[in-house]
Length: 200
Image 1 (cartoon, rainbow, N blue to C red):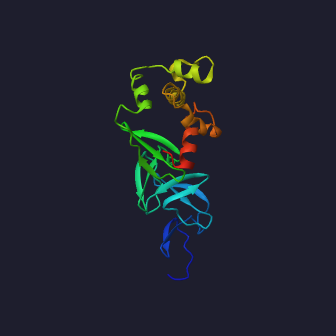
Image 2: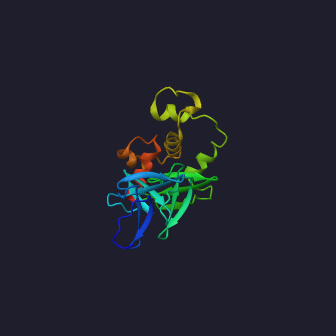
Image 3: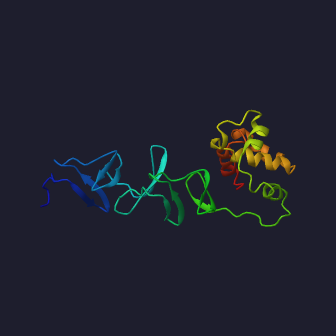
């Protein structure tokens, strides 16, 4: 009845917003919590978050009834495409592949498919294609870092490979401007530079 305090645990909708009432009557606030094997997030006012939102410096997505998406996969919200990692975090400021298709996400998590040049006239592509089949990053790592290649193939060498290829193609100057964002042997350095200057 109107005016009676609800003391039973459960979800309520007021003014189009969802809240979770704890047993006894208090509304859950500022917390991630689990109900019937599904996770939810309530902000400091108790509103259950939906859509794409920022939580502890990371972006997440929750369905219209508030359940957090925790399985890896794409979602579309307000016309923008996002990719959720296993566990729930949205990929931001990074490149990634799904089923051998390359994508890039900007700092807000908006995802676009990466289009690669097809023609062999591109000097960088020519050099890179000659490396197809190489199973170790030792050559690229040692050239870039001038140190021993540690931990065999467990050492990530993708960024060092990119720097090496540009150097071999005589185009190292084209990427060296990104060095202010970190070492060119480290992919997030390229991501930060490309995201800021729209040079994907």
